[in-house]
Image (cartoon, rainbow, N blue to C red; front, side, top):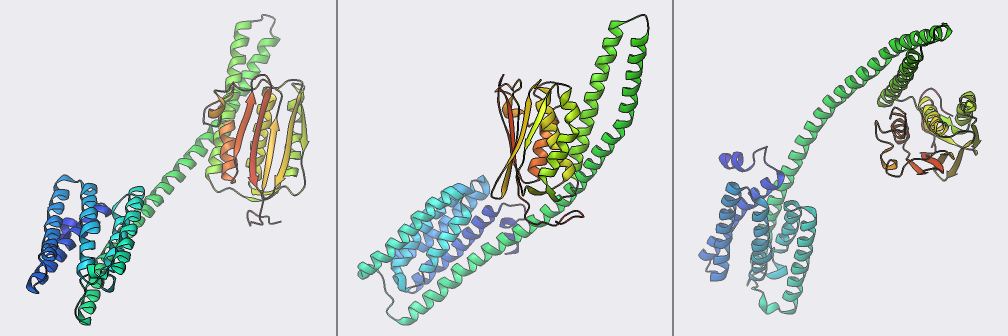
Length: 426
């Protein structure tokens, strides 16, 4: 028995493999015992042959599956031969629905659910239910088709024996399943702990690296601007050098924005300081800080907000996301109006930022929220950051655009439901 357990119940085996092995071993013993007992008691040849045949089939399938690894085929053969043929024979030979074979029907249905994949298992279980229901109705309509026991003790023995056999095997199956689940859960918890440490280390490295890059970028930017101003004040102009310095400054600023985006993403990965926020106030503050920037291209920001626009979130991240969307609209619009309005619908607030600018090509729209993808000239972090912020707050974001007619960005945020967070609870 110990060798059998080590062979057929090895921890590395899949649950369905273990289940088939249990059923096959049980079939060998049960078929052999049933056939032998009925031969000793003078039972019918059909009943004796059925028991011995089931034992032989279980042994052959066990060997076949172990050697070939085709457990699914072996399971299907078992279901057809045992659940659809052998169990119905036992039902009529051992008292019909008065005997204990109803427990075998339940046993078959549960084992089918464990042995096969979901869709296939569902179809076969439906057939089993139809078959077993039909057998009971047939036995009721034609009682002469059932081999009834001549004494009440026969029903008692049949019911107890079948209950012990079916219940015992099902118990073993469920214990194996639960044991495997617990083992997998422990492994998963251990892996999650390791991954959490790795992710935390990566985030800290990411944030520290981005932060340390800011100082040298600032120094280089100041030096480039100083050199450019000195060159412009010199009598001997050098357009090529001025162009090189101007291009260098543009790339430095682009790299600076990229570092800023990386820092923002790192802050999202860490614990956010969420609290109840009035988005109307946040939008007003963001609009005020962008007035000077928008005026450089002759743009104007029109805002329309309602009442009771409270969300639960990180104010800094939401403000930066809103700033990114407005700056994107500003970059593709000139001497026009950028609109920002909000609509509350039940437990959700929809924010819309729209412009009448250049628009975006249709083939680019599905990929705009991917990291590194830009609609033109950006770092590819802006919209990716917006999507990350919105989704980290339980919302959705999408873009509608037509080239030459402008772009509309919409995102949703759930209404605050009185959560506690940060240092403020309003």
